[in-house]
Image 1 (cartoon, rainbow, N blue to C red):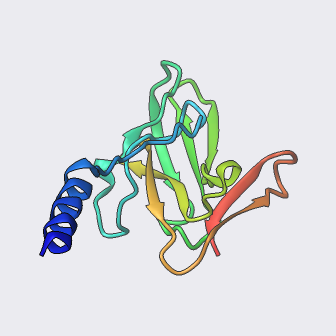
Image 2: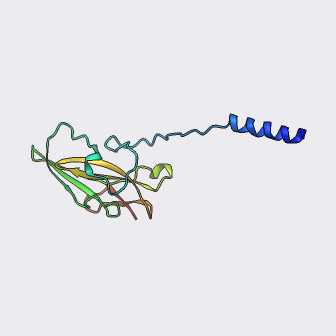
Image 3: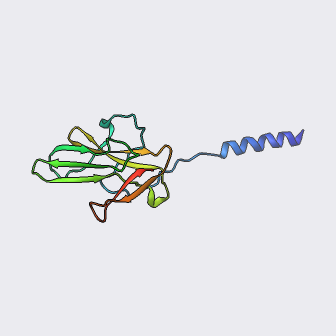
Length: 141
């Protein structure tokens, strides 16, 4: 009987002293990357995070992969001053061993935005951009 009481008290003490912690890891993403949680493919573009355009006014925004994380993607933005800029999808977690997240550049009207997705059936991989040496683009492959 004493052993049973001891076990019950010991079990209660273990349960009372245990706790669960959730820790966020700083991923040091590029400034233009989103720090929002990964989303599902079905969410609207308006939930994305705006990309800094250095005070320039976007006139057109063209999402070459149509927000498909399984395609190598680039968004091209043309500004009111006639200049243009390309934003390539990327794998922000690669350097930390997390191959399951992709940051997609998307268009919300003329405004470039980013959204994070979880690669559901594959991993995020980076590939060289042939037309832009030194640059890489990511996709869930």
